[in-house]
Structure formats: structure tokens, C-alpha cells
Length: 102
Image (cartoon, rainbow, N blue to C red; front, top):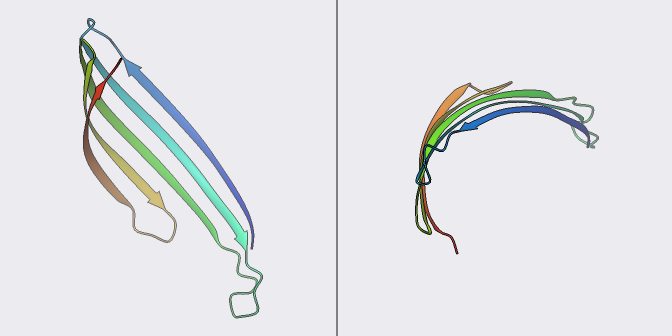
């Protein structure tokens, strides 16, 4: 297999700490990937030259809450994925985390 993988990623991240306890933030990112290859086999796939490109657009928003040494985060987001040879789709996600800093 011979292949070449290229890609670009751009990200904008912004957060503003209102006080020592609260930090809301947002993240917007775009990625573009391209795969080009050639197969060398002894069967019917020999010489096949697949070219696949994908674009991902992601938007995330969240809030970080700090109290003493405890850190609590809540996050929500959406990601749209467009790719050759597959159906485009959008996924949504929620997340949280609890941490302790010492």
C-alpha cells in the first residue's frame, strides 16, 4: 500500500473568567483531511487508487466551576461530518467531569 494523508485544522477557543469560580468557554473548529492511496496486491484490488476526503465542523460550549480545589465542568457540543463515499451525519454530545487539584 502506498498512501498520502494530508489535513488542515483550524480552531478558535474563547473563554472568559468572570471571577475565580466561573469560566464559560466555547470552541469552534474546522478540519479537512484527504487520503490518497494505491493498492499493490495479487487480486482484483491491484491498482485501485482510493481518494477519500472528509470535512469536520465542531462547536462546543461549556462552563468550568471552581471551588477551593474542586473543579466541575459541563460541556455540550455538535459535530457535522461530511465524507466521500459515506452518508453525511451530525452528532451531538454532552459531557461532564469532576476533578481535584492539589
